[in-house]
Amino acid sequence: MKLKVPVNSFESAVRQIQAGADEIYMGMDDSVFTNMSFSARAQITSHGVHSTLSPSEFQKTVDYAHSKNVSVNFTVNCQYMSNSPHNYLRQKYLEHVVCGIDMGSDALIVSDIGNILFLRTQGVTAPVIAGSYFNAFNSETLHILEELGVIRASLKTSVQNEENMI
Image (cartoon, rainbow, N blue to C red; front, side):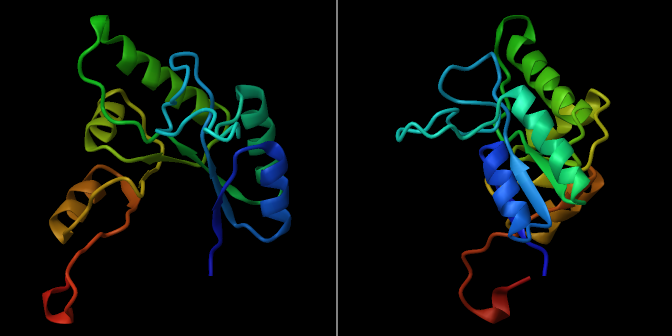
């Protein structure tokens, strides 16, 4: 069994890895948003808990995880942003993604097909995982994701009987 866990700080990464995590996933602060992040999570929750890591803490966590042979997935789950002057938000998203890749992330967690397409057209070849926010309901969607280089996805279904399952 592979244990994949979220982390929101270097300290939580150390604890999770010492507890046996094989893979961690985390987001990183960005300079664009005050409350939310490109990870589609609040940078600081209503309880005052930081849910994304600063860039320096992100780098330190990647380095530690890799020293323990633990994979790092970078959450960049925000929805595709199509309208902003001079494509400002898309460019900042791309810069954010490239920064995480340059810091050593092993894969990107993306939950919007528009963002997957955008990253691929921009030459980003990093492995992509369709995040849990991504709605893949059938094998046709999974086939399209596979063609886009997505290496892992969760199939969602509301079907309750076995005869209608894929």
